[in-house]
Length: 325
Ligand code: ACO
Image (tube, rainbow, N blue to C red; front, side, top):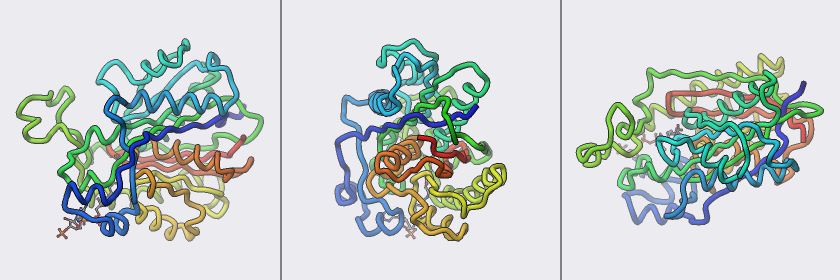
């Protein structure tokens, strides 16, 4: 049985925050942000919007694109590091909004979340447990940001992307590689808000309720693990980088993507890039990119695609698949 993507969707909040806007908030400037990251602007959730709102809209559009009845969805997975609440899961909220009967859970693997969720959804179908799975990557990253920390506030944005997985005539999932290295947990963390350090007046004062990131370490980590995980899925699929039609990398920093293109001796045309518009939307970057590439007509049946993620955990991983729409 071949298992692939039946439909894609995405949703970006309306509000745009430009580099110039940020320059009015912290000691930074458009030139620094563009040259060091490639980001020009990002989207920000409205005051009354949360991750499930973005996820729901992306999901609706993916179901429409798949041309299926929403009741055919048997499982919803939401990859997110910015759930609406610690509990209940954001996926359960999306299930209710969609008005369907389905199993639903969140998956926490930070920016690698979609790659983990894609593999998980595929595995449920492969095991014969469900026939159609809705896989969503959705984030309200700006809710975790310390707007006085120029090292993080320039990087992140909000958004959601979704795919419907199911049986296809051809192509589909080929290989996956998922890795975690918890020894680097402290490199990207929201220290307070979980069971280790519940929110208190003290943690609020110490800004421990915001994301703290060691940018340089994450950069080094990304450049090291990106080739490793791509090589792993290429080897499993018995193909080379030359055979890949489009790489869909996590959209964190253009310099990371450029260094990988160079390393694999591939032109940048083979790497989908939209980080200039949205910044880093964590688990949402890859499904948003897949949806945009799909809707732009950039994907042809039979194309070989590699989606690659890395981020908090630390986690990283890739999925190799063939476009079957
Ligand atoms: N504006 C102006 N100057 C700045 C800014 C800013 N926004 N931020 C840092 N600087 C300064 C620094 O203070 C430093 O100054 P100094 O030399 O006087 O000390 C200088 O610029 C260079 O700082 P670096 O941290 O070395 O800059 P770098 O080139 O590494 O870029 C960046 C920083 C953009 C954060 C980069 O390290 C990066 O992209 N890292 C990866 C981050 C990432 O991908 N995180 C997400 C992971 S995914 C997830 O799971 C959520």
